[in-house]
Image 1 (tube, rainbow, N blue to C red):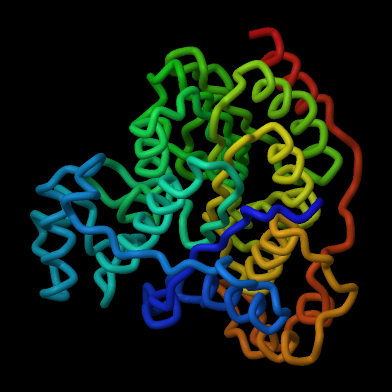
Image 2 (tube, one colour; image 1 turned 180 degrees about the vertical axis):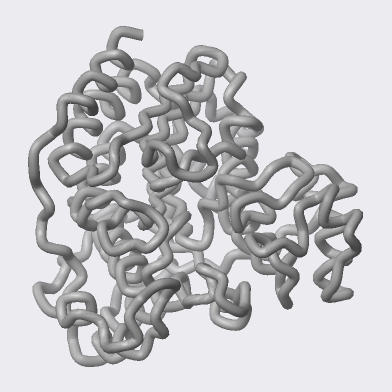
Length: 371
């Protein structure tokens, strides 16, 4: 992928200082590892790294209910919630626990996505790995997501007159919060590729929203060949027909084979190939993070993605300083306590995971193509 002079990266140090705690799948460092690897590799040139602001409640109220925002900020201050707040707003659950930074951390993700939406107006591509919290609802935390930064990002883009828009979600889980918020907007093309029979159990093939929603639930074991078929059979044709003025891509890394919270079998190459192809049809593009619960696969996927977006050559083997960062990571949920496989610390790119494209996937692609 050629160098993009307008490529920028939005990060923040709050991801290093806060976490969901305990045995939560998001207790592992992710964005901070990507930042550290990119710095060691020399992949931040002048003006490329931007610090995400912490969005204030008045800005977040563009989408979120002020009463919910008040409950979220109070929960952070008090470090506890009442049963009524848990019932009404979903705070203080196993999935959405009370922790230090529980407002500031997602508000920084939202601030980064909204900053990107303002900056991309002149063109280019912006990588916001801290974003992608696509399950958040207007007045309720949902699926590890306290706020919905993809929705806020799209709403800012729309306010700046950049319709029509497109949202492409490559996460293993369906973006129920985004579809609930914006699925009735006919000027927003929404495409989601997600594992079937996987939480949140939404995103049926038959769902259409206002007519511009394309959900593709895929069987377990989706490989790189299957993702390529999806890219050329669904994503690129729909983007070309819709001709969006800006594209937001949610690039969760939980569809990569080693992730503990899905049963898909992609290599990180498949994600990079998809984003690079989408970029060629996008005059403006924002690439968010999302799911991903194996700390090594997430760090490698999003670091390599930034390298590709900014035109860097990916090394065949990582330098020792980068390997040391990966070797020091704590294991994720369900991972072995021993050292990770050598390839997960010595390289960025996975081996390709090609294979047959099943008849079931081909049938679903054909059904969507007939719409």
